[in-house]
Image (tube, rainbow, N blue to C red; front, side):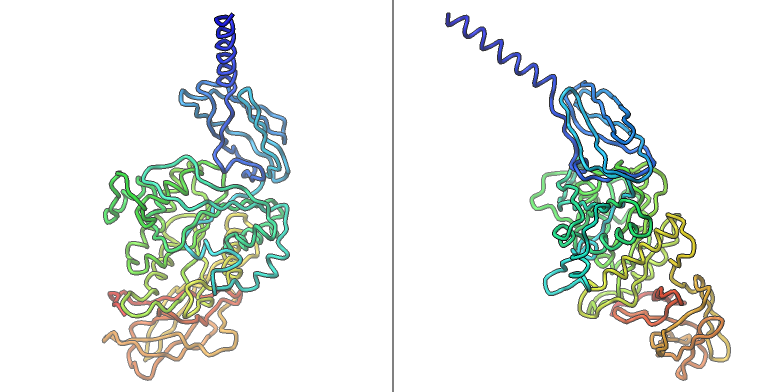
Length: 475
């Protein structure tokens, strides 16, 4: 009797194991969950884990179409599904015998939002550092067609396949904690395009750019020292590759329209490197994503009083300006008018974010009539003690909104700069200084902290610039 009972028990346990083994629960990376947004009109990849060699089926409610594949020997699988024009909500059913259902899924436009503290800065602000107008914006933020995803901070010496986070609804309590730059950018896109918007915020305050580039990408820059791959306690987020590995790699391949970026302060003393690293990061991400030259827009760092001992941050802004035309399908939002002398986190995040959105609306979505590019210097001519400057991206001219232009300096061959008088003319700007009889160089707003006062008539500020190529000097 006892032997019979044991045999039955063993058989029962065997059957339980066999059934559970045969119908192992599908496991998905955290980016695939309820409330998610998939990129519209594309082949959107969905992937995860199942039992080894299991048959996996995916059904999408927008077209009632089924897709199937077979998991590999380690259980990995990936399926690409056809997405329609923007809409929803929909459901996605995934099964390997046991069913998993993703609900309230939207189809729309997805953007990855990355960088350091000015991207991370939430709508509630930092301690003693507010976001201008955030209380009203948060109170009015309920929107069923915007979804928010914040990646939890993590580092890794090896590429990871998942991170911590989930898609949240656009409601006041969630917007309160979400990136202000990303939210205002997404809100303007939603209003202008009238489609669902998905925002993935993956950022970490104070970090350099090198940690956000993959190992393969970093190998393009011989001055970047790659870390040794050995166990390290408290791995610094400043270590090259470690943020890409932990906070970008898990979503590589997820369907996106493009990326936005707000970073640079931590690299301000190496502008000659940053000028190459910024387009290098973009090309690196494009390479691993494998969806072509997707659009990428970034914010130029704002003027700020960094104090003595470092390099004038205008050189970094110059590097960003040059980087903005280094490769195709990128652009820079200038915020020369928004900096704060004693706070590195400008409170007016809405205006800077809208300038990012203008770039996307005009260049990515092709909406005509939207001014999106700040004026840039075209040509300098000096004669008889006077310098005349002309500008591109200013078809309707320039303005100081009635204020005196105070940010220009001129220098002679001795490289000594003096404050200059500047006037807006029909052709551009005329600059001179009584202290410089024969000017050879002009600089505009070329200081750590300064409030820019020159704009296009569309309200887009002119970046700090210089006409010389003299070696940078520490302050």
